[in-house]
Image (cartoon, rainbow, N blue to C red; front, side, top):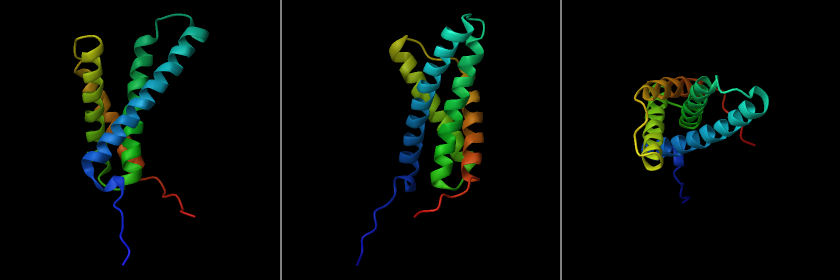
Length: 130
């Protein structure tokens, strides 16, 4: 009889953790890209606040999207969970680096963008396995 390995995506806490960590990586990558654009093209710091909000939205959206794409169910709830987990990770990193928590308004932004990403991830087409 064949043994079947369980997927990483069958465990809810593990899939939320992996999705939040991938959201952190996307957030860091987007921050570096936007910092380069600001430094080389804009040369002014007036848009930094808006760029930071865009980076947070991208990280939250893709965190929820990855979870929704691979779990294929409960996109709103699990995307919301990914956004909240991403906020917890960002707050922990902020506490370690600067010594204080991030603003509580970010949890709303990350939760909403994670929920939107989870809904979009659930509704994407499945890739055909070859």
